[in-house]
Image 1: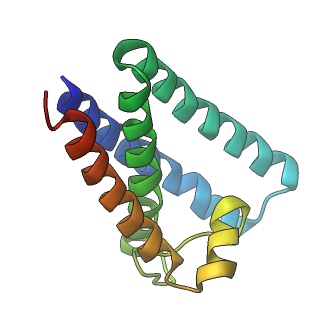
Image 2: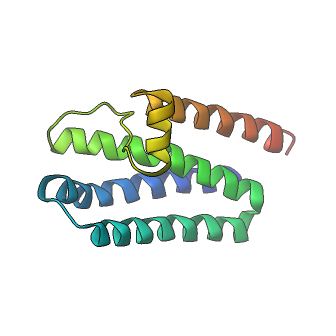
Length: 136
């Protein structure tokens, strides 16, 4: 069951990212005020939090932690890839925004912060699966 939830987390992050690409493009190309962007990020974060909360209720804290890590790892690369495919300018798959926690990572780790973020999350997901569920 745990692996089904992890696959669903991956699919959820993928679907949210693809769904968000037109809005992100709209913000980028046509501009937006802070109120629009705050509302967009608020509901986007709320949706992800509700999903992780539902996973917590169904599967417990470790399952919810893994689900959150998967969403955190998958969302930004999918946004970068789909924006690269459908809209110029070209950005690498590991591109991160310069706002919020991702902006902090970019300042601390440089332009390849998204690559480090994805690698760290992947290693952590694999390690937690082995440690926590290896004996199940």
